[in-house]
Image 1 (tube, rainbow, N blue to C red):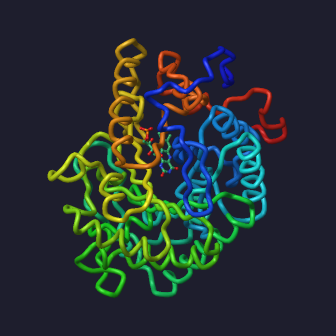
Image 2: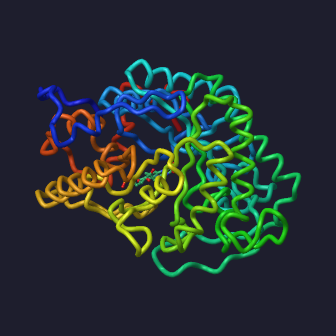
Length: 411
Ligand SMILES: Cc1cc2nc3c(=O)[nH]c(=O)nc-3n(C[C@H](O)[C@H](O)[C@H](O)COP(=O)(O)O)c2cc1C
């Protein structure tokens, strides 16, 4: 079935309980019309790093559906070993960048804003991966940990040398180039992907960062030096007014129970350094937004981050879903009334936390894969029209038969 916005007529008045979500917000030079964000969601379908026309339509539909800010799927910066797989999106070189520019314009023409997510997978890339099978992967201490399959974390294995100072400087420069490109191409800002156990997070996490030089250390603040230098370079290259979002998480794909910070004080050490370096908004990635981050209060990660830095934050994690996020083994959502009810109840809790000022923006991932017009329906209070997310939602979201690749490109 092809994705299209439903033609069902809905009341254009905003449902009173949800009105605060539809107030504008300014983040540095960025004027957002509402508080609804689509977070980065990789599809692994970018041939040679290029997403192509079905993705331009996929993003445009979510913009037409009323989303305020769209974050492009994680896109590899210009290092040969930045992606883990050949069909992940790129954010460098002529073809991918020209395609991203087109996608951003489509989104902006439809009334939303768009930022790319800049990504380097670090040691998550398996050694000898195609096409640069002869190049080692990069990481702070050269340690590889297998992504989790739900069983306890696997032991780290030494698969490469720790990154040299030269390699660190090179990667920082490559991020700077991507930031400059994001601005030149007309994006509304950029997001640095420092979450989920990829390269930047490998520096932040004590398990993957065993360095004894200035990029390692016993404290989270000490291990944040790589991230801080990278943010400064992006700020320097993209300019003073260009919005920089920084996505981080406690959980890792190598270990869902991992933690960067055990206390608010420890978290503050990292966040203050990043805010000073130029971050404008923190995107705090959690799998369940309602979970308190530390035992001393019911604030979640975005709540604590806002309290500690005073900067705007985005919360995320199972909004309008009743289902666990387990990347790579996405479980099926029961397609029944109970699921719908749970989703609506969960929105009540989002609003409770939002209206008391815990966070400024909410990101809706899987529910927006299933519902391109999630924002429009929620604005009207028509949660009853939201389709449940299921395991096929991802593939369906970019399935446009009229945009199939030309015969010469089909295998
Ligand atoms: C298919 C899929 C791909 C994802 N790809 C990315 C990604 O490229 N970058 C990222 O930071 N997070 C990624 N995520 C995590 C989402 O951005 C989001 O944090 C997560 O889905 C939780 O939000 P949700 O419960 O609303 O889906 C992905 C999630 C899914 C389901």
